[in-house]
Image 1 (cartoon, rainbow, N blue to C red):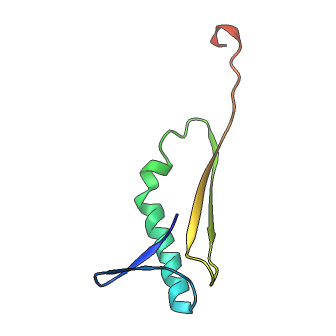
Image 2: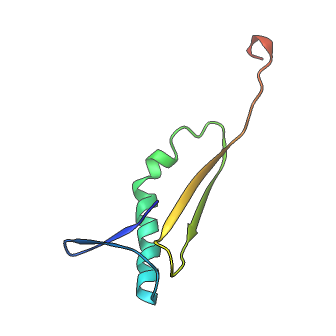
Length: 80
């Protein structure tokens, strides 16, 4: 997921090249997670864990991934 920072009326790509931009990157990730919390937690019946990975590097635009890992359940014949 690509993160952008809104400064006034302008949208800028967010690269953590300074302490201030690193701080903005962390805040932006938190804000995105909060916005998507309902979607992320939708249908958790067979989810064994939710993994959130973020990479903050000076050469790349800030991005993060959300992975859900599901538990497989085998139901034999007759649904038992």
